[in-house]
Every structure is written in C-alpha cells, then in structure tokens.
Length: 594
Image 1 (cartoon, rainbow, N blue to C red):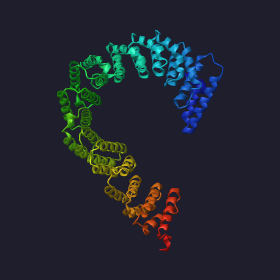
Image 2 (tube, helix red, strand yellow):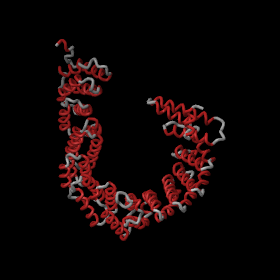
Image 3 (cartoon, one colour):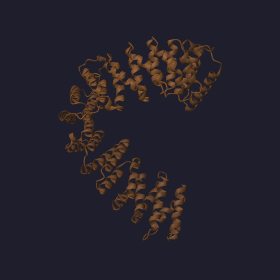
Image 4 (cartoon, rainbow, N blue to C red):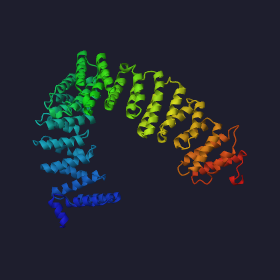
C-alpha cells in the first residue's frame, strides 16, 4: 500500500475517491476533468457489475463516489440507483441509514420508478422509535414520493403528526404538503389534520402549517374561510410578542410568520362583517407596529405585505385612507429607500383600489421629472402611473414619460430595464384601442429611435405589422425612416427597419439616403452586417424600378462597389441589381471609365 493511500485511510477517506479529488484539483482543463470523471463512472460501473461484496462499507464507498459523479453531471442511473435502494433496505445502523437515505434522496428526486421499491423500508423507518431514523425517512419521502406511493405512506406520515418531537411533527406536516402538491384529490381527507397543526404548541410547527395551508387555500379559497379567525388569532399573538424571541429578526416580531399570515388572509373569499373587521383592525395594528425609522428590509417587507393584504381584502375606506397617508409620508421622506418602498406600496394600492389613488397623478409626474438621476425610482413611479391610468387621455399623457425613461436608461446602458420599459410601452398603447392612431404611431417610433440597437428588435415586428395593416401613417413613417437613414453609426436594427419602411411605402425619395447607407457600409465593411447590405441593395432595386424612378449614377456606383463581396447574399443582390439596371438602360460601365 502506498503512503498516500495509507494516509487517506488513516484520515477516514476512501483512497480511490481521495486520489480522484487530487487529480481533479491539479488540472485546470475542463476536458481533462470530464475525461477523469467519465473514467471514474466507467470504473464504478465495472465495480457494480462484479460479484457482490459482503462488506457494506465497499458498497457505501461506491455510492459516495457515484453520488459525486452524479452531482458533477454524469449519469449513474444504470448501476448506482439500484445499489442505493438495496442499501436502504439492508442498512442496520444509523450511519448506514444516513448515507442510504441521503443517496436515495439525491438520486431519485423527480419520483424515479425505483422509489416504489423503498416503500416497505420507509414504512418501517417511519415507525421507528429513533427520532433520527424517522426524520431521515420523512426527508426521503418528501424528496422521492410519487402518486403511487402516497396511499401506502400517508397513514404512517399522519401518525408522525402526533410525535412528541416538534421536528418530526414539522417534517411530517411538510411531507403532507408535498403529497398535496402532487395529488390534491388523495389528500382531501387529511386537510383537516393539517389545519389542526395551526394550534400546535410549538411555533415551528405552526409556521409550517401556515406555509402548507397557503397551497390548500389557494386551490379552494371559498372552502376554507373558517380558517380566517385562527389565522387572525396567530397574527395577534405575534404582535403581542407571545412567540419566543428567537423568531424575531432585527427587532421585528416573527416577521416571516407575520407575512405568511397576511398572505393567507389575502386568499380568503369575502367573509362576515365581524371577521372582516377583525382582519382589518389586526392588519392596521401590524402596520402601526412597523418602525419605518429603522429603514430595515425586514420591516419594509412586513409593511408592504400588510398594504397588499388590506388592498386585496377591500378594507374600509378609513383604513385604506390611513394606508395612503402613510405611503405619502414615506414618499415625501428624504430617504431614497423610503421613497422606493412607498412607490411599491402605491403600485399595490393602485392595482387593487385605483379609486384610492385617483387624482394623485400630477404629484407623481412631478416626482418623476424631479428624480431624473434615480432610474429605479423613476421606473417605479412610471409603473405606479400606469396602474393608476384609467382613460385614454391619461394614457396619451403617459407616453412621453415612457420615452423619456427609455432615453435615461440608454444613457446608463441598462439593457434589461430598457427591454422591460419597451414591452411596457407596447402593452400600454395596445391596452387602449381608442387612443389616437397618430399618437400610437409616434409613441412607438419615438421609443424605437431612443432604444439601444439590440433592444429595438422588441418593437420591430409590431411596427412592421402596424405598417402592413395601415395603422401606421405613411407620411410619418417615411419622415422617421429618412431621419434614421442619416445615422452615420449604422445601427443595424434601426437602419434595417428604416430601409424596410421605405421599400414598403415605395418612398422613391429615399434612394439618395440608401446610397449614403451603402457608401458608409463600404467604408465600415468589417463591422456592418452583410444581411443589412443585401436588404438595402434589394430595396434600392425595387425603388429604382418604380414608375417615374431611374437607376441614377450614384446608386449604381454604390452598389457596384460590392461586386467583389464574399457574402453570397450580397453578391446575388448586386448581380440582380446590375441586371435590372442594364435592363432599364442605366449607365453600368466600370467607374474607371468615368
């Protein structure tokens, strides 16, 4: 035995696995690493095919190495998965069970067909008196269970809800939640038992019940309204600091439990007046207890969820007025964080209760113009204004703000936000069919002109469709196209659409501009897209063959300059152009004779 292998054994490591890790760490080549791992998988496949060893340690080492290869992206299902199942069945001590359950959970996450073979083993482990065995079994069930396994395991998992250990009760509840997600019909008889977990004495189990029941109520909001008083009671307990301080974060009492309660309350259908009043009052108390002066993300999270729940529940006019006034105070704060949070709250309120924010547009427009250096805040204000928009006149007034926002984003180079605003503008103008077609066309063309060239493709198809359907004014389109053709930077998407618009509307006056495009393209031949050149030559030929037009000296010379192009599309378009020019009697001799 070599010294390295002996050292690895003394350290409790598998020598072969240790050697593989050393080899992987010493090579920087991805190809070499893949080859090493592929060789390791083949070696493990041969080991698995060998006569079975009586030592479970050798099988454990094989599975650990197979698990590593699987996590590195190599498939070991043809030999390792069955080994994992047999180890689950044959393991006798806690160490072996822990490894077996871990490997099974990693290998068969997506409900593999071999998962069914572990059903009897899992039933036995769920009934174990050892807390750790039960916990590990619940973890494997939650990771590997399929619809076929639910009838065989659900009763055993349900019994774990009565376990003395809160960790087991919590894991059992989350496992039932997993069962409900994959087969809601089979879990209908067990929903009542999941609801009882809201009254569990341990806050961890209660918190897990809020998460699990959110999925249940989301599927059938009208069937579970009786849960609302219990959720209000839990939220009230949290606000009164009855939960252990270990659940607090940054001075906020159990913030995640608060948010889960509010999310659950937002799902219920309209309830009785007494329950609705209790919900509204509790939510207002939670809102008042949020200390916005500490400017903490946790406090802001609770506040925004509270605002959303109040808006969704259609709280009383007085309650929503109180919320609105609080948001306005935050928005008028000197703190940028407060302003951002206030805008998020206003967006939520505008979407759910537009009547509460109507008439506040002018103040937000002034704020949009004032905060020119904060593009994120401006984006939030624009989203809020769009949510508040209620008629065509307001929609038209909002268009210049979209264009101005795009202009500021181009200056910053923020491509992702540019694309988002462009999509928002397109949805905005399409949402109001009564908007003046000229205003729509101008909005789209202005936005297209302001966008960075890679983002322009998001509007290209819409502009072409509008032009083909007659929704885009020909006179306006030609004016814009001629202006774009004068851009000496030759942005490909912008020039391509301008060329297409001139060809679509047969704008003979654009031939001189197209000549300039071809001359610039020849000067910057290495950076210009050949497809743009071919498209420009084709459009020039179509325009020159129109009645009243001619193949002028300048356009012919500009096209002839590309006769030696190595691009097939460009060469074909040049040949077609020269043939058309010759057929129309144009002067097509080489430029050296002039």
